[in-house]
Length: 115
Length: 111
Image 1: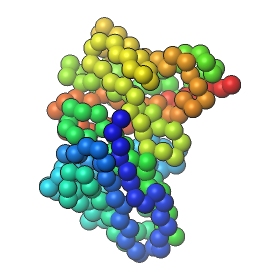
Image 2 (image 1 turned 45 degrees about the horizontal axis):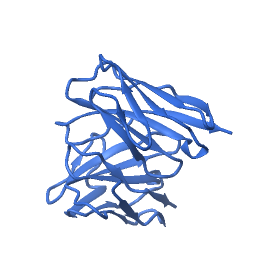
Image 3 (image 1 turned 90 degrees about the vertical axis):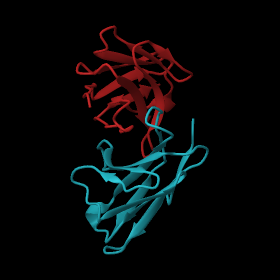
Image 4 (image 1 turned 45 degrees about the vertical axis):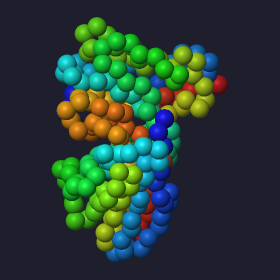
């Protein structure tokens, strides 16, 4: 299957700082990328959908000013957690697809710990 | 999106077939059934998807009932590495590709 990478795989940051997570599709052009968050022992929760060149669409309850998403090219989307707090500690996962009729491929996830 | 119902957990003996059921009684005509799995602390992995007909690939088989209200994912010869949470998701072509995850089935393959 197609390969999606995320960087970093783990990050620890101090409360109040911002953290950027990158998501790349390595062998295909992703018209759409998705960002999910997963708390321990819970399922994945969709945060937002981003299409290349346009603003992201956020799910209800997700603050767009706190979770900034930039889908600058067909192979790269970034999620920036601004002014992080301990409750933002979570496993953040991205996925990418070539088109809405294609399967999504997921990245390996980024473990964020805010101290 | 149509909702799915899956058992919370299942056990399977190594080398035997694992049959994971999923109910999706409110599925619409244009919605596909997708299966993903997530091994602990990794991103989900695509397994298979189908609309009406049964599907098979190198990983698994997907059996969809004639009324499309339920399906079964079959791992023909389960190995210890198949221990994971398996998610059954229905998705329509006109939903922008969004996948909405339920709680899934935690499959434990035991020696």
